[in-house]
Length: 505
Image (cartoon, rainbow, N blue to C red; front, side, top):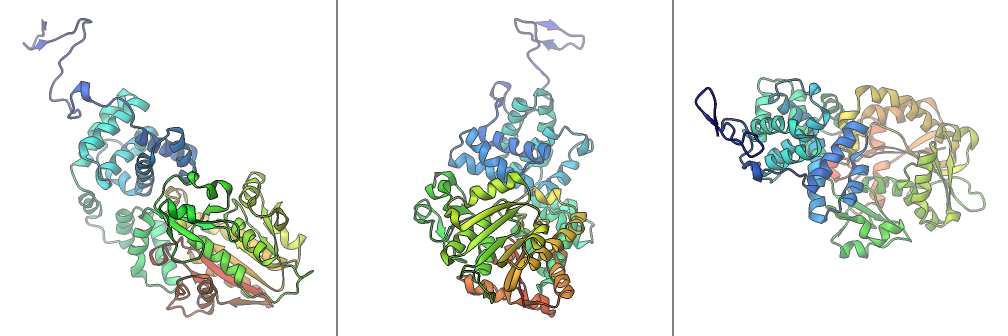
């Protein structure tokens, strides 16, 4: 033992290092020997997903399954990792606003890995049934293991400040004094302001009441149910039901589940059972069932999926085509995605389909008046699938809407040139934004005099088990709105899919 000048006693171990430290330091409640110094596998998976999303612009739904397999998580830990990663990504805007009040510097000055660790800690503290001491200890342990010992003290101190209040108290503090409904909703429901504003406008444009915005934003933040579809004539859902899935209540040959290892299902491995949102299933079936009045060559209908990648709707359409004795061409502009389309369709007999690699805007010139049914699943902002793609709300910009507009119109025009007289084109987007939906269809109808709109709501009802989807636009006064259909997460528990069915006279 040695004395210091202040009269205190310093204890040193055999190597000469100081052993006792001031009890006033801000540390975790655990004794040093008991503090976690390793990363819990489930939390490590969630951290790796956030790092891939923020550092590599990866998609969480593509990264997460591989990380779960790499770390060999069991079902319980996989569920925890999924909720932690997706929850932290969805609520990132609100969590960052909270962290900004607890960190002594702008968040942009933090190392991105530290910020991701903090977001995971905040989600555990404020939105999961994780005891505060466990959330603190495990997040600090994760930081020590994968970032370094230095940042762990900062993370510990910041999360202790966060833990001092409930989420409702933090939101009340963040919104105090605000009189802008959009800003308040943005902070309460963790959506960028421009998206809140766009969704409010979309509700009104499609005949809904703007007061539904709260329910819509809450639906975006709810953990999505996994939707399965058995390819008609090929797939079987009995194994999924045995594994705990329940029959879908909106469309035949569908099943629902909160999650699990889908790779254990033989049908999923073989490609005869696929993961696909019910909204996507419905619009594909609506096109397949629509009445066409075109002349058939050799008695066989020819179908086209103009924007087929990555192949989910193309596979379902191909199976439906095979049942009807039809043939389908799946077009995809990029070679690697064209391979994904071929892989997705591989369970369907090969003489039913062909994959074309090329620009969809050229199909109308290369194959004029050649197809009886055409799906245009146009590239869009994806505002209708925010619950399934939690990171997309922070990546998309308002300018994306105007930038995608010309492409959407060119693809629809190409399809209208490629469809036969009497044939039907389905224009589909996974976005309810009026500029990507109604406005595109209205422009096409205004520019040509050989088109007529079919009742898309009635078409959805015809292929739905509920028979109540066509009432989606109850207050619409414009003809285009009355004839198109818009699905909603808060009403139908589907992605916000838009459907217009256009027949060439």
